[in-house]
Picture 1 (cartoon, rainbow, N blue to C red):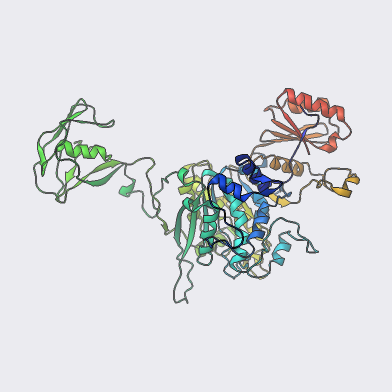
Picture 2: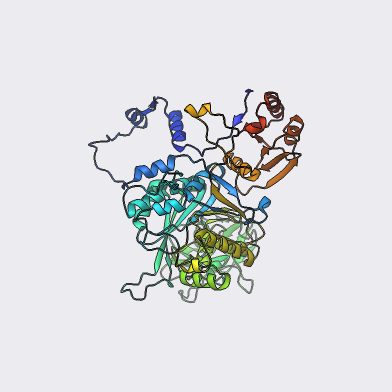
Length: 634
């Protein structure tokens, strides 16, 4: 046991350091004094190493500013998420989360808590059309204003964020630089069988495909859905473009489950929904069948006679009945062109056909057509289903925009229809899965999730992220009273909770991206200056302190939150982590924390509250260790 407790890591994971450590574990010796021995690594992997200069040309995605985008990905963040209790509902037990802030910073903050936990990520990023809608949709111009209102630069132009949306280049380059780090971080969040869906149009479709192949691997490309958006056509155009794309990539193609959903344009009365479906096979195989055919499980066990009847369009042969007794088939008579009944049934068995009864109670028939095709019925598998890649009749952006404004007062140009999102959710998620949308826009994803939960009784949860970008000064949204786009997102979520059945049952937690409540570690000459507190000046919010510690300890934002108070000491517990804040901490109070029910696995104290109390700190470590509890400080 050490004499000092562990420290809470206030920075997000250093991805580059983690990658270097993994490489060193796999291939000892390839990293020496911080330098990669590429030739040695190539020898161990049995691959050629291309020289940086003069190497042969090869296929790959490059753009001006890519290296800066990678650096923005690898730069750790010390930001935090602060609870907004005024906008939240049933905060302590809420399962749905809305975060206001720059999505790159937020994605970094979510890495510890949500790695490998998200079943579906759907995003509708800026299309880079060069036009402004409610949000800024042109990465070809200067982004200084964007950096200012997003808090990435201060009044003097100094960077305050690790985001790097101003990477060199124009048009596609800046768009790619914006998307790359976000997609890499998003992939980390997906479960092994998780799926990423990205809405896009023709402008950046080629760039997006190249980028996703690089991030996810070309082998994990599921499909490109074509969404027929009939309501968004420029009527004066010579060529009327009425479609967009939804690109689907899997975290691991091998683990993605086959969807159970049929094309939404097919009614439930369709024969495709029948338990038994008609199918056909073509006769093949040896002409001399075995004398007996053993029937598989599921066929009638004994003394059953199957009437073999031709279809109306078949040749008018008289077909002999097939008799089954004690699970053994016998039917010696010729049926069709030298084929016996038992051979035909053997083909049925080997191809998965099953017996059913008609309305009169007669046993199943099968038939042979003049061309040699054999018709019969197969039982629909629970896993059987199909999804068409052309999506029709799932709503339009214009209709959705008009309806949201008219019914709920939500003003947003061209929001994705909630029925489109609902369909995608039904295809790629189960009833209790987590969905993330970090370009939340008007909040259509929350709406689609709520609708699907009402259909199948599910309890799907969401994490939505949107930046508080100002609406245009002359926009309809500003005239309707919305100062920022994130206000529109929240309004849509609130309206869904008020109007969709069961949507309000799981509560809502609202967080805002903010600067860390803790001071940065001193270094150099700064170490000589003794700060009176580890907290930044003016920080007195116990809940903000606890929220940051819990998130940095990897506690998901939808974990139950319980508050305990012991005199002047406040204890916030979530996800088996307890955060203790308050003057007057003593052994007796610490004992109460260690004996909470359920017992926390990790207890975090503020250094401020333990300052000058070495005996207390040693006692805490000893008592916690005897109970299997880890003590940390921050």
